[in-house]
Length: 229
Image (cartoon, rainbow, N blue to C red; front, top):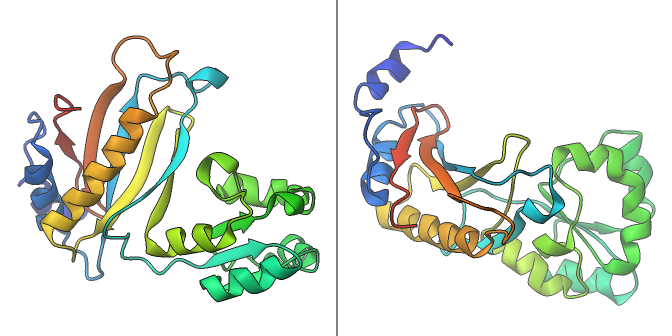
């Protein structure tokens, strides 16, 4: 893969053979974020799980103490008094059946997270083919299928992120922006790692965390020491 001059200059600052302590890695990821926009700082965690087995799946959510730095748009599927509750909590869009054709036929996807009350999952299930591949299907494990829509919406707006294994058994999640202070990113990173270590499936044998890499959107990867986790 061919990289631009800026990337190559930034990459020279990172020693690929070293596993850095988290705070050092964060400082390097911030320093090598040289794009003209406020880059997202992401964590990529390679696990020893085999996601083909149901008992080795990882999926959950954690509220990052300092948020993600991104404005998150929330859509809530509900009915009755739960509609007003979702609106009062700060949801960007609320509705029911009437939203199905808008999403299915018009391709409307102007939202980042979908929350649904359990009694609406029959309706939302019809959107599986549209929302599923985009990782937008509500899920009880992630706290997005719930009757407590107030808590769900407020948590998401406060910086709740979902983590899950991809097909290569890697977890990719944002932990802030390059403009954040190092300490803010470190707090977010620690909260995330604590949640993931707790989420270790008991069926996983051997080393659970194979590698951890931090990077900015356009920057090089910085390896983080897995020893402390």
